[in-house]
Length: 306
Image (cartoon, rainbow, N blue to C red; front, side, top):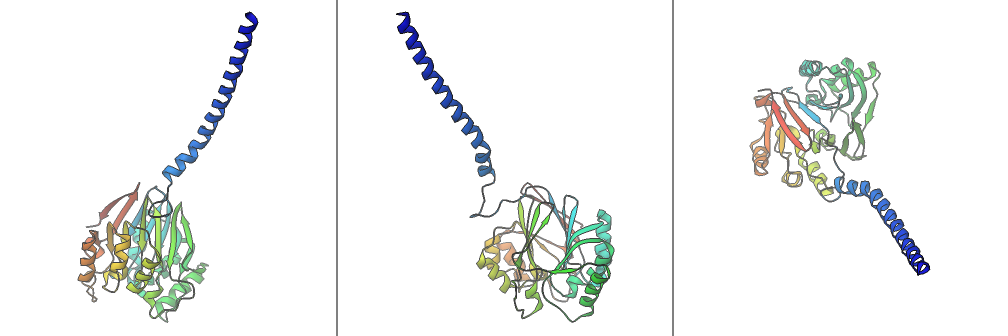
């Protein structure tokens, strides 16, 4: 009986040992799979396969330069300046940057060679350390355009021609060029505008320069993600901010950069009505002065100068 008992006991012990081994293996697999499961859960692409958005803080400064554009993107002590307003507004840009303590600009981007976008860049290029100077493959036979190129050459800043598909990193935030297409021919210079999709703070922003509705419609047809922040195209002109674009990106906040009492009547009533139809909060440099939009954890907060 002792023999039988011992035999049974050994048999049970063997079976128990096998069970423990299996359990150990299963436990190891579960533990090993946990990080992957969490990654799949938290980093699951949204909106039909879009890339996840970095959630850290990013700040957009829409500098009041009157009738023109100047946008500073701030991310973890790194900066990108998009356009610089007219030449006469150059000190507004440099004063604003100096007050923030900016010494180096990782990127300076000239969206297209119209004076209300590039005029102040000739001063900027000589005032700060420049990481990269980006512009579209488009020229303009104007003094302002030549001064910008001369300033770049004088300060040993080489211009890089950008095209759709190019991407640039700003301290973990991604700046993606959506337009213009490589080799594109332009009926007018606004069509050459560098259109940027910026991902950071858990939010996407679309910065369109002066891109007209024809460019917007093509971008929408090609596929755009939702964008909580929109820099309204062409200072709020009715030739931009198409319904095709708005129906796809559905912005929460729309920023219009234009001059008070400008000769063009910007922003046009049609644009304001279209933005209202989509429930966007509209802020304007002509009414509100410089505008700061802070984005963090998927939330936007807006602060205006006035």
